Amino acid sequence: MTTDLEETIKRAQRGDRNAFSQLVEGHYAAMFRFAMQYCGNREDAEDVTQQACVKLARALDQFRFQSAFSSWLYRLVINCARDNYRARGQQAVAEPADLPAPGSAESGILLGQVLALVEQMGEGFREALVLVHGEGLSHAEAAAVLEVKESTVSWRLHEIRKRLREHASPGVDV
Image 1 (tube, rainbow, N blue to C red):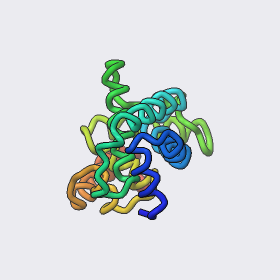
Image 2 (cartoon, rainbow, N blue to C red):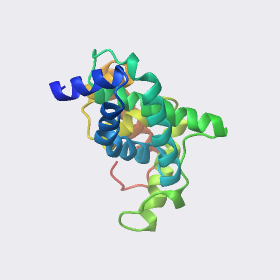
Image 3 (cartoon, rainbow, N blue to C red):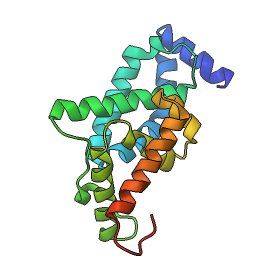
């Protein structure tokens, strides 16, 4: 963590509104990008990001500089996403129509099916997938965010690949 970021966080923790504003402005895009990857649709991602900003204001004094601020922030966004879906009585599964379709409508449908399958695997699998493959974090970095062992992240990703192979058409490499 840079000394500038550390100082900005400390000032924001002491109630400096300008420092808090700098903190949000500096991290909003990453928070939204992660929420978008986690939620799979813009509307939910916007709601989750807004909730995360409110929660950040309330919980910033709990950040103790024992981990990277980005790890702590990922955890905060994950918790907001889970809370958002629980409040609606939904699972965190995006509908295929809501997903971006980079190459074609078919790829959007495929991504929706993958997210639905991963969601059925239980808590922690979706998070590991999005952190490692969506955000580009290493297994160790994702483990720090999720507060689990690195081997747990590796196992979760292995199980996802295994489950995808079971559901893949013959000849499709997963």
